[in-house]
Length: 246
Ligand code: ZN
Image 1 (tube, helix red, strand yellow):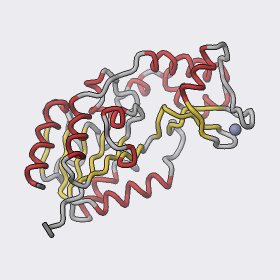
Image 2 (cartoon, helix red, strand yellow; image 1 turned 90 degrees about the vertical axis):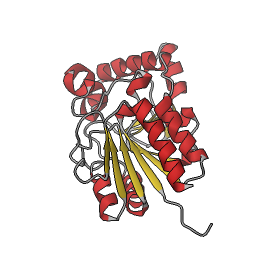
Image 3 (cartoon, protein in one colour; image 1 turned 90 degrees about the horizontal axis):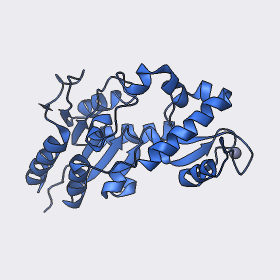
């Protein structure tokens, strides 16, 4: 019983949510990158400077919220991993909140690119509720402003042209350094600073497992590379990790 149980860090990207019907919006080959009129909606300059861009962005957000996606077997596998009692932290590039919807404890999920459950004011930084902002859009305010200061509201996500939150990134670095097993799931590992995390983990002595449909720059550094569809391969991997760690 004195044996230290391994700390498992799981980094998830768009690939874990595609089986929930959410396309890859943000990656190097993502939809936003291929459609300039869509990319504006999530790029800080046009969003801040042009109210018509914000109005389109709010309508897009309203339509997305109406077609809420459901977690899939990949998300549920990580809940099983948590319930096994093995120490777990999930670092996600996704803003869809599906890890928490699946039942993962919220404080174990670090959202590297923010989330769409909340809004944030560009002026006073006040955080608010996305459902409340969307209710105002539905009620006829095309571009709801900050209730505190009248500033511009945006979803609490990291837009193109913005840096990742330094505190969040610092926590991610610390988890990568401390973990014993680092699993990268459904992420191309091509965009820094998130792509530095598996490197930090390997340098800290962690075993790296890469699960992605396409090759990544870290496949050679990985102890194991898994290509299969994530909603099938991740439950299999979790069963194996639980058996090893128990
Ligand atoms: Zn404000």
